[in-house]
Length: 400
Image (tube, rainbow, N blue to C red):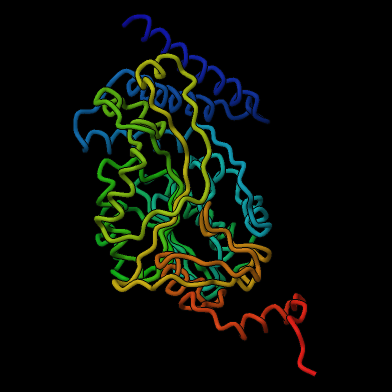
């Protein structure tokens, strides 16, 4: 026990020491000594919280929720040990929008990917667990004057920071009419903050659902507020197996998005039970466990970040079909990636099953595809398609 305490205390000491050195090296630090002392007192409180949650456990959902809230409130004031990386491919507009996000927002980002899907112009978007608003601000630059994005988070300090930087991002993105807002609330209880049923086109979330004890409630609320054809596009951390109770009770691993991770197969079970389409995998990235103490506790469990799409589809689904992507989704001119197994190249005729056909024909992507409702192909239409594409076959024979 003492060895564990010493290890954790050493971590906190280093964290605290680095923070003090950073603060005292600020320009004019000597002229604002009072501020520095206030910062030091605040940092002591933050470090005390970190040390306490590294050494304790939670037995109830309420305890877990409060612990997560305390951790992220503390991190929002002082920065965190949470580090992230991203190696996926991003549209240039998203890259540019990310580069313009204020540093005070990016340093408070605790996600595990980039949860910004395609074709958001004019959409009503809800950001579940928005934190300080990084994704929401990027989305505000993509939805145009007729779109709207609402960020929801339970962490009061993060919501406060997000609201403070609305005007900054309006100016950076050239937005005349405000198309973004941030609300304090729980993503398991969207009705309590006025989010009505069938009111949203797209929901996004980044590294948040794993932090909620009641994930089924989150997904059920997401389904309720989505319009038919709407999409939940979210990045989160998943595990390869069921986790032990000892792991589930570890407060520090909750804050690191590990103790609350869902066994990936259970996502499919929950989605089916609630009414969503089968989850469509968009991308993955490994989440290695480098701390020996936690590696021993976690055993053979593996972790990764995954981005999924869930769609709210009508009760009656389409039959199998042939789809032809027109190449007119901004940022996806050469190909559109629905998921890792369904990548539609411009002009290519691609047979799909009934579920994918229903996703395309009922979602915001329906106008970007030519749809042949079944696989009975008119041979004359097909010959005309080949001819139009400059691929007319050699004549079989001719009648003179």
